[in-house]
Length: 301
Image 1: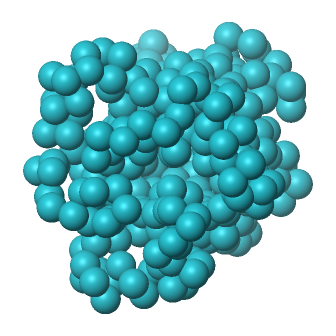
Image 2: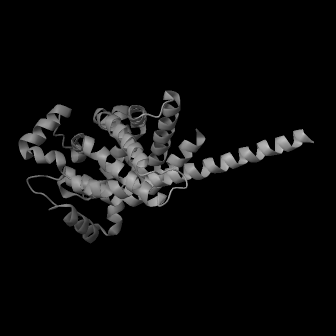
Image 3: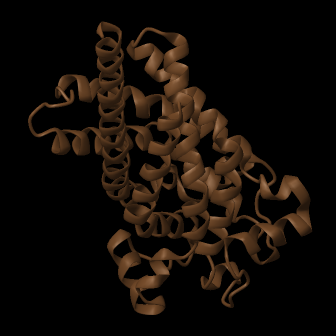
C-alpha cells in the first residue's frame, strides 16, 4: 500500500517536469479570444511565449501542479492499487473501475490545483486584463480566490473536473494494462524500459482523447471571471456559447499540444511508477526469502 503511494509521488514529479510547458500552451490556446486570436497554433504559441516571456514563461504556474500532482499521483496510484486488491481479479473491467475510482477521488485536490494553474498561466495575456502580475504564486492565487469567493470559489469547475477525470482515468489504467500485457512487460523481460515508456505514453493519449472536449469547457469556466469579466452562467451555457461562436472545432482547440505533452508525461510517469514498484517489491521478496531462510536454519539447529 505504502509503495503505491510512494511510486505515485515519484511519477508525479517526473511527469510535471516533462510536461508543464505543453500544458501552458494548451491552456493559452483553449482560452484565447477567437475574435482576435493571439496564437496561430501550437508552434507559434511556444515561440511567442519564449520570445515575450522567456523560457520561464512556459513554466508559469508550475508550483501548483508540482505540489498538487505529487499528492494526486500518490492518491491515484494508491487508490487504484488498493481497489484492484479489493476487487481481487485482474480483469480489464476491474482495471477500468479501479482507475475511475482513483480519478473521482483525486478531484478534491485536482480542481483547486488546476484553477490556480490556469489563473497563473493566463497572467500576462492582454485579453484577460491581467497584464500585471496579479498573483505571486499558486498558493497566493488560491488564497486570494478563497478570500473573495470562499470554498465555492476555489472549487470552480469541480463538476467538469469530475466528468473528465472519472472516465479518463478508467481508460488510462485500462489502456496501460492491455498494452503492458500485449508487450510482455513482466520483470526481467527484454527491452522493458522502452516498452513501459510506449505503454505509458499511449495510455496518456487514450485518456486525453476520451474526455478532451470536457477539458476545454473546464478551462474556459476556470478562466471565466479573470479581470472581472464573467461570460458563462453554467456549464451548458459555456458549451452553447463556445459552439455558436466558434463551431465544433473549439472542442478540440489545444489538442495537438495536449497530445504532444501526454505521451512524454505519461511515459515518464508510468515508467517511473512501474520500475519503482518492480525494484521495491523485488527487494521485499529478497528480504522475505532471507528471513525465511534464517528462520529455517535456526529451527534446524
